[in-house]
Amino acid sequence: MNIRLTIPGRLPSLNEMLRMHWAKRKRIQEDMAWHLATSGHQHPTNGLRCHAMITVYQKTRRFDEDNLHGACKSVIDALRSTGYIYRDSPEWLDLDIRQELDHKNPRVEIEIKEMT
Image (cartoon, rainbow, N blue to C red; front, side, top):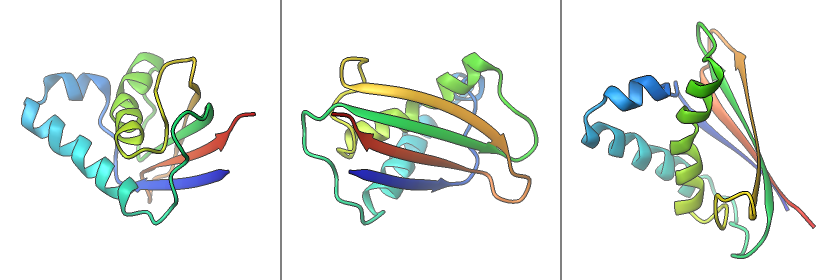
């Protein structure tokens, strides 16, 4: 199993998320889950250990490490709620998070592989 997903748009940093109203944070989470749910990919079955590579493409500047990992929490929660990953604990998910600059196309790219 090898799944590639893309969530278009800019990902808010952890600092931005913490300053947002709870309803706006919830909308962001729901939008991410909607993009994942409508991607057309088959979801892995429950109970599979997975490796996920999340690459965040920023428009102008990179996040520092804690903001990057905090910003990806909503992505990981959306992956879990839509069934792409079973659990987000280290027992079930091996996670790598990276970031790049793309001035014209900010997005989040996710690659999920089953670990054997």
